[in-house]
Picture 1 (tube, rainbow, N blue to C red):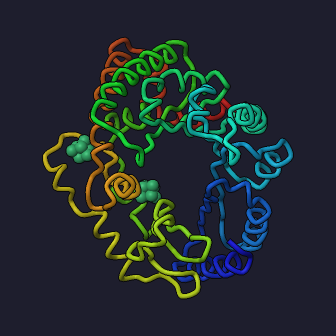
Picture 2 (picture 1 turned 180 degrees about the vertical axis):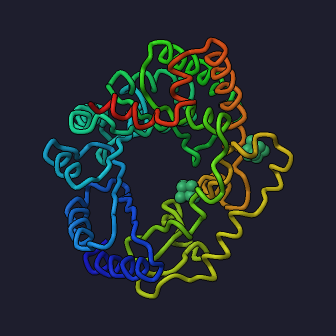
Length: 348
Ligand code: SF4
Ligand code: SF4
């Protein structure tokens, strides 16, 4: 994105904030690799810091290859929450994450991990699982935990070529991960593992309410390098599909297109009718549905297989810990102050 589009984007955002009479803005820098354009990131932060009436927070995800001690310190002091991508131990990571010259990146990422954890012990890792790494989920999570990370977000590569047989492999991996989870609970460890903790919470408390979700294209939008507006990051890649373009920073939102896409994303998924997991399943994420099926009104079969396999394993793991009256488990899932307490314990 050139500086003139950045300036126009910032003017557009400021005008929208005033029009909507809102004061909170959350900015996510995304790529590719956002640190390639780090000067532009700090330019944006500098402009936003002049908006004294707005409370602006930032986040970004990095592959870690350009991270340095000084850069991390600057991002941290500007309140940019930086998440690191690590797919697992070096063999797993290097299977998919090579640099532009085709060289492995795991050694750089391990160095970035140390740098980032030193500055922020609550740094989150995003771990992406692909069909060829499905058998190693438990080992990958254990490796990331052993590096020192206590916030681990696990996700599938929904655009990959998943076949039904991969979910048998994933089931075994999840069972192993369940044993790892039990072991860590018994050892009284404080940590967050999205695959398990989100699904335990959706059963213990209640599923995410529709109002808390992204409400495709209304609560959140993404700006493409040329200033076009899209409902979410994944759609920025679809610049050849104008039906997903909800406006431009020069002309504002196309409200009819916004409303159409939102309505389509909220439409009942007929393939899910009667499914007892419907309230806990992530089939409402239009990005994932789009990546997997090319449509936003159709549940992804990959999500469907994965949720069925994962929820079964997670519920069995949780039942086991509940029946044993495991203190860490009860504290984690039944104490409303757990998130704050554990964050303090991890960071202090
Ligand atoms: S990834 Fe899914 S849940 Fe997140 S903003 Fe995009 S559509 Fe919404
Ligand atoms: S995607 Fe599958 S698991 Fe999820 S609600 Fe629909 S039918 Fe159920």
